[in-house]
Image (cartoon, rainbow, N blue to C red; front, side, top):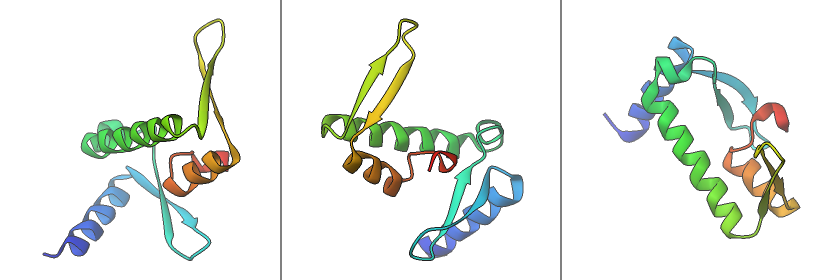
Length: 101
């Protein structure tokens, strides 16, 4: 089985069990999926942890590149503040939840 076929099988499986869901199309016509945050951790922990790692690495890259900053309130709750370029990069990387776009 080729890598592409393997990826398609995984996508089909994750859709079937409800770990991901169809989210639409990007400006180039590519299919977009999103993690079903309510159930993915339990249904497909390997996908959940890979997703978490990808998001964390992406955010750290943006922070180290000065494309975002983090402010904390008195309860130490973080707020991420993106530059315009940082927001565009985070959007392209898929690390901003689709409902926030």
